[in-house]
Image (cartoon, rainbow, N blue to C red; front, side):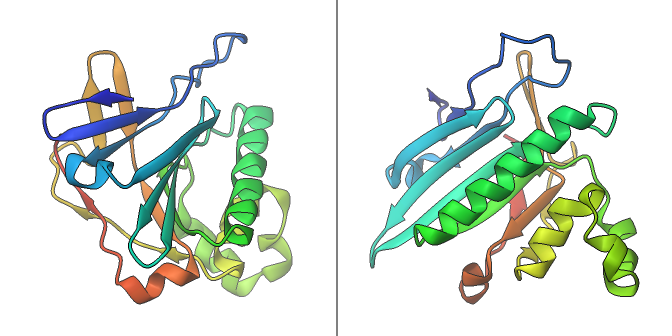
Length: 183
């Protein structure tokens, strides 16, 4: 956990045990006004971080930040997707509202036609994450992008990119608005 003047940064542990090109870690910046609600954060891997926030009325929110490696790193990509799906299932069972954001290295616009027109193909392993999200009622919250850098945060040698934000079905009632800003 690091502190900036207006935000607190939560970061995953870096994986230094393997020679992996795409293991730079993930981070979540939270406004300091919300940082007091953070009760826990966990680095599930260098590519998956979760941050738990607790609010009045027993409202528990878990935010996942994920970096899914590109298709060229198929084993690492598959492991990351499986880990994310398993963590989402555990989070739902624990009664958390939750959202997932990060760099998915995927294109949802090319997946929708497959999902709606070829369901037998949509459920294949290559489409596993989008199939899970759409089948369980997750909502793609396309960010309002107020950033010239298109959702990319750079600080020293760290780069964090957000191309998708998904919310669980329970968050639909809260009119979740996602905003990407220049840090």
